Length: 209
Image 1 (cartoon, one colour):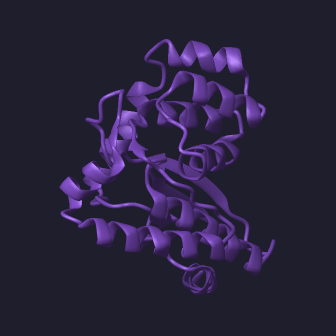
Image 2 (spheres, one colour):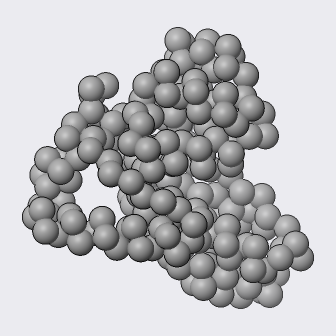
């Protein structure tokens, strides 16, 4: 079974959804062979390098009040904890394009899943800037990727065209929110679903062959 996980490092529900999906796969066990691929999506493609205050950004983008934003944060902390992900404070929103470029490269190195988890943790648990070369290089080192090769990529536009092409492809397929989980190029599950929802859907699709 091929699973494309379309998401953004900046998306907190993507952290919930990924951990939920992986918990569902653990429950199903090794009888379901899965190829998991991470595909890029940018929630804020125009975000400048200095980023923006998170409350100001979310209030303007979604029209949410401070009380609504705090309620969402509480829900995220609870849902994250239920699947083993810890949300900390995230005071700023940053650009994630370079993180997506490194994720494409990491896919060629067989380390994409490890890098994705490390980036989500750096951003949502530790409030580190995923647009910062220093942060990105440190995260790459932490998952065993070649730091000097990563440095060369960040100093160039390598993998930029691939990221933009993949983003365009999924937008043209009607993907406008994340996480979006696409199974065998045919079936779509959207949102940070609980493990039970993923498990039920995966078992049904597996049984259909």
